[in-house]
Length: 182
Image 1: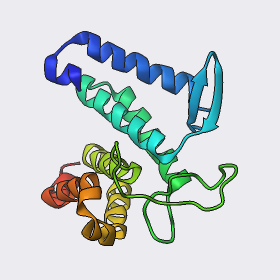
Image 2 (image 1 turned 180 degrees about the vertical axis):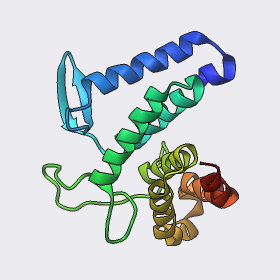
Image 3 (image 1 turned 90 degrees about the horizontal axis):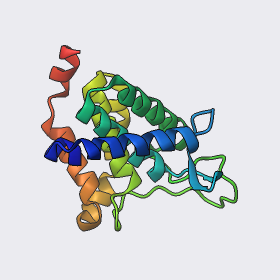
Image 4 (image 1 turned 30 degrees about the horizontal axis):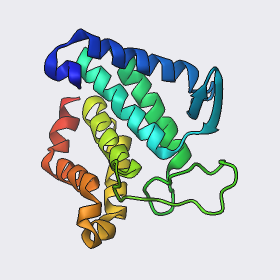
């Protein structure tokens, strides 16, 4: 984003190096992300937030550089995120994937804390992917998340600011026009 706004190549280069490092060292062969890297040792399965924020960053790299590689990486990671974290019964994304060790219960959280919630970031990722690719599955999943958290957004709008912004983005976009142009 710094590169897009300021045009400083060093910001783009730093973002690319960071993304390349994560994709090389913190992504397993099956596409799943790991959470921690210290001196060559990789530990802990990634959470929803790890996936959603990395997809957001990769989409930002694509939009700043126009390099298809970043869009393809974002799509691949978003597809893995949907496979691992999606709640088939009620929609939305769980914070953890079903196979994570030591889970007593899987939770879903639309509320922002110091950072936007993983669900809010994921919805924005899916909306961006739907706009860029025209793939209906991304839009359908985004709609499902927004519908699933409607009650929570109404109950606590101050704690749901980013998912409310995603809702506004969804409602303000002419999705039929985008689908027709693909």
